[in-house]
Length: 217
Image (cartoon, rainbow, N blue to C red; front, side):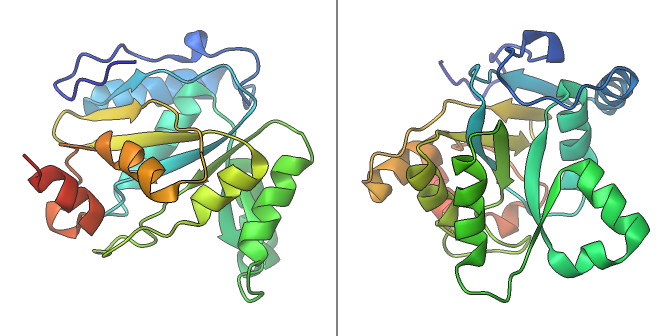
């Protein structure tokens, strides 16, 4: 797929998603979420391959406001994407129920390597799974990405789908999947390239790899 950061990627809707892609099965909520995004001036563009397992990257993530558009995007597409959450959050019954409904997986972050292994295990069960991760690791500036997402995808044998939230064009972009080859530096460059020109809500917090990418001529 050609990626044109001037807005020429095709619009993406729930109706275009293949039958293998994990879905929530919503009827009314996708319509409401799509209406909210449209009213807010945001568009969902790009494409998602018809596969049942993948790691999706949420980049750049520089503000809590990102979730105001990211969550309706998932609901509008009816995508069932799992994300990681601290196990302690699930101890509150009402909150725990909501988190499970939202697709949050409880993880014990105290155990070294547990997040990585738990993620790989989820894929190896063979069930449909789209796992969403934020490799920048925090909303503030970061000098490098956390690479756990890469090793999860490599061990599970699934592609990495970069997703961008561009405040300049008001687009949420689902971009070209990258298959892990084992050459992490080369594969990371393929991923970084797709974020060239993407504008976060707080440009000064853009992670260093993407700053470097934007400064290249």
